[in-house]
Image 1 (cartoon, rainbow over the protein chains, first blue to last red):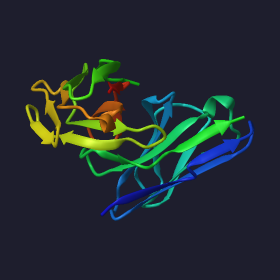
Image 2 (image 1 turned 90 degrees about the vertical axis):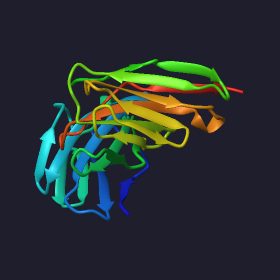
Image 3 (image 1 turned 180 degrees about the horizontal axis):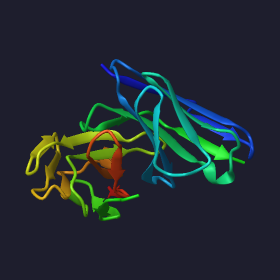
Image 4 (image 1 turned 30 degrees about the vertical axis):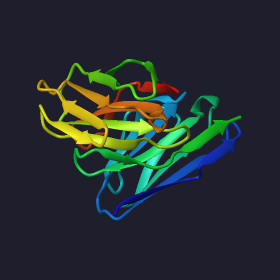
Length: 111
Length: 110
């Protein structure tokens, strides 16, 4: 069966520091991968999606970037965090248009 | 980006009551999905609908994919305390991600 792992679960970072969140999927090949951000317990906003290694599409211009160095690995990064980057970040995977499956999320607080 | 119109925003109900929520969109989706999210957790997929007109059940949950492909509803029968949480609808066209509603916050009063 497929599983998705996302870490860390919580993170407190100072303004201006770098960020790296990692997500890996097991039990499937060539999944579509996604990063979402959720503010205030509502409304998931798509940040990035990837249909293959090295292929990244950005939905919202911002202070973040994403990379997919391996088939089942998706990384969300920032060189310098802003206060507005605080939120709940969720990684997800899908195969075609069959629904998406989410990780447990990372609560990021920028102080 | 586009968001789905999900209603109601919140529901305060008594345990044992039935619940109904719906989503509408101005554009067509190939797949409609319903998720439940508990505090501090990722959304969990409850029901996936793949064909216009499809009616699907998962225990006490029933959902339908609208004929026009622009809407969907979710019903929960005989609510229990563990049904508390935020329910999201989502539409999917292909590989480019899901479009989400803003959620329905379900609160159950004993």
